[in-house]
Image (cartoon, rainbow, N blue to C red; front, side, top):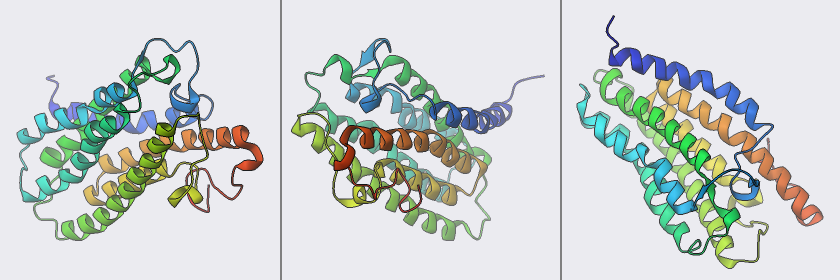
Length: 259
C-alpha cells in the first residue's frame, strides 16, 4: 500500500502526543545541559546565537516551503499561519542577533551542546510540518462560522504571551550583558515567577491552540508544557539554592500564584 502524505501527517501527529509524557517525565529528573543547567561531558557545543538560528530554522524555511502546496490557501489560512511565523521570526532571527553581541568570545561552558540543538531541530521539523500541513491542507476553515471569533480571541492570548516572553528574555539578555555571573532577575513578571519567559511561551501556544482549534494546535501546546514546566521547576530550584535567603520566597516557578 502506498504511503500517503495523509498517513505521514497522522503518524507525526500521533508521535507528538506520544512523545509528550516521556518528555515530561524525563525532564523532571534531568535537564538539557545548557545555560544554568550546563554539565561537563555533553559533547561539542555551538555558540548560543548559532544554535538558536539553526535549530529553530525549520519553523521558517520548512513552513514557507510546504505551506503553499496545500489545497486550502486563502486569506483565512494565510492569516492563521502568520502568528506562528511571527513568533519564530523573532526566535530564529531577532533573538540570536540580540544574543550575538554578548557571545563574541564565548566560554566553553556557555555553548549549547550540538546534541541538544539536533534534538530541537528534529522536533521543529516535525512540528512545522504538522502546523503548516494542517492549516493549508487538512484543516478546513472555509465554512467555519466561528473562525474569526476564535482567531481573535486566541490572538489576544497569543500576543499577550509573546509580550511576556519577549520582555522577559530581554531582561535575561541584559543581565548577561552586565557580566559578573548570574544575578536575580527583577521587575515585570519576574516578581511573580522565576521563569516568565517560559510562562509567556506556554500562553502563546495556548492562544495558538484556540486559534487553530485543532488536535495539532493542542498537541503543540501540551508538548510545550511538557518541555518547559519541568525546566522551569529546575530553574526555580537552582535560583533558590544559589541565592538562598536573597531570593524572593513569594515567587512561583512558572505559573503565577499557582506553581
